[in-house]
Length: 359
Ligand SMILES: [Zn+2]
Image (cartoon, rainbow, N blue to C red; front, top):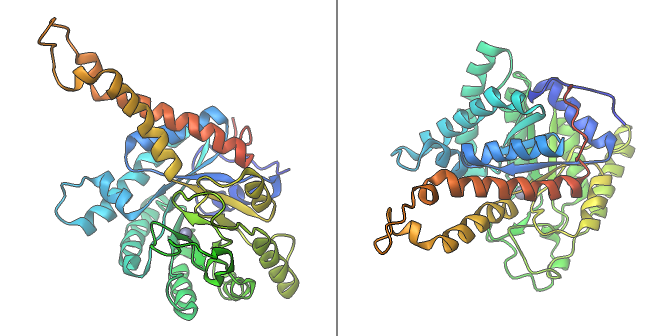
């Protein structure tokens, strides 16, 4: 078990590497939770503090846009500025929750490379002023493009990121699911080679990127984004094991040289999660499950207090409803829903009680 400790707050550069290594050597993974505003960021940090787990906070491009405000006319600028604002919020508050927080951006496909490059412009400015980057890691998902283009772009972007102590997450092989419109008919999904990453491709990525800087790999092993009916897709975590073994043998590295990421983890069987973590998965993305965990208690509250969402004062008996329609009443319930769901996630991933933040 790792004896490393870090100062509580957002971790980047060597601190981020320490966090990743502590998870891998400690046999656990961290939840990476998508957020869209201060309610969800705060709930994720509260959940981590309650579980005494470190945590990864993640912004998609549309999450960033929502953070800045859907009313902003320039959607691209909103995606950039909202992502910057979310990271600044975490930099200011994370240490007060007493846990370590890694800041990530989520899937950026080919059309979103300009979003990443604009965030790097901001990251470089922040680095100049504070000696650390805004984000711990960005993600490029060019898995829908030919592998030469995918790896070439990853190398180009990582060159730039390494200079400001950032890590890059890449994707190899296609993770199916609703978000991508890939693999929606899963007849014979287990035989669809596109749903499974080839270890040879992972080796190529390692040989190209490892000399440039720190990176992690989301490999497809039958995982899908969103929710799916159990039984339609077969998870094959041994693909992760085989990838680690191939890199270890070919490059003469130590055990589990790759930093692996589990995408599309919502609704996965616990045994398969544990197996994947044992093969060097340090991060599991969770989005769909926490969205529902936020919305379900809000829906229940609205149903139970239906008249408070129709009248400020009840026209029949004069009952004032201010306490119920104050958005804080139901937003707090949503936050508590996330906190509860993430206790389970930390438990599933083994990160509960394992925060390496120095107390
Ligand atoms: Zn993915």
